[in-house]
Amino acid sequence: MVSSLLPRAPYLASSIPKSTASTPLRRPPCMSSTSAVPAAASAAAATGEASQPRKLPVLLFDVMDTVVRDPFYNHIPAFFQMSMKELLESKHPTAWSEFEMGLIDENELAKKFFNDGRSFDLEGLKASMVKAYEYIDGVEDILFHLKQNDYEVHAFTNYPVWWVSAYLDTSVYMYQLVEEKLKLSKYLSWTFCSCTVGKRKPSPDFYLHAVDHLHVDPANCIFIDDRMTNIEAALGVGMVGLHFKNAEMLKKDLCSLGVEFAPVHEGEIQVQ
Image (cartoon, rainbow, N blue to C red):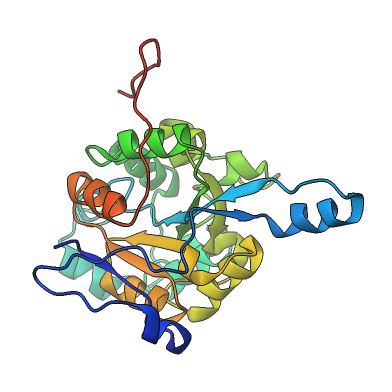
């Protein structure tokens, strides 16, 4: 049985089949494979031209521990020469979340990171994180094929501006980090990042911001994340949710929801 979770929004409840052990979940009837892009449709109506179809569903990917390995649980405690328990007890309870939402800058983060205000090597911490960043096995291949088949793919992530500064060309932060090392923007757009939107998962407002920005029905969005808390929030606004466990299961689940994977033709460059 696929591990996808269909939306629970009241207006969809009557049209969504219940999953059983012998009946895999399928794409909801309202998740069409193409649709007119609203802006394009409006322009076409004004000029009398035919609107361009928009390929659906739109895919929203969490990044840490869904696309990229998260260094927090191993490399960061090791950097501070602490156990995870010691790190969690000594760090400030909200400083990192505030940094992720762009409420404080990295200088303020350095001052607030530990409850006792101790100083630490911020540049060394960033270097340690960069060293640990790598694609989760098999996920880059999935992103490559989604791009080949013309799906809209967006990052939907909680993380600070360190991640996306190069892509957004900001004048304050030019550390680039994940983008500089892994070039995720080859496959997805850094559209929904907590540091630029000012909202974090699992706040429903973050998900509603995404569907409003995309001008798409929530049921035409597939959200992929490794945390069930975030999946539950997506279901609550009417999105389809996929609980990420590994790339093989993700590909099977996407195929079960009707997502097409373009074959790699001779001469195309395979991802490494």
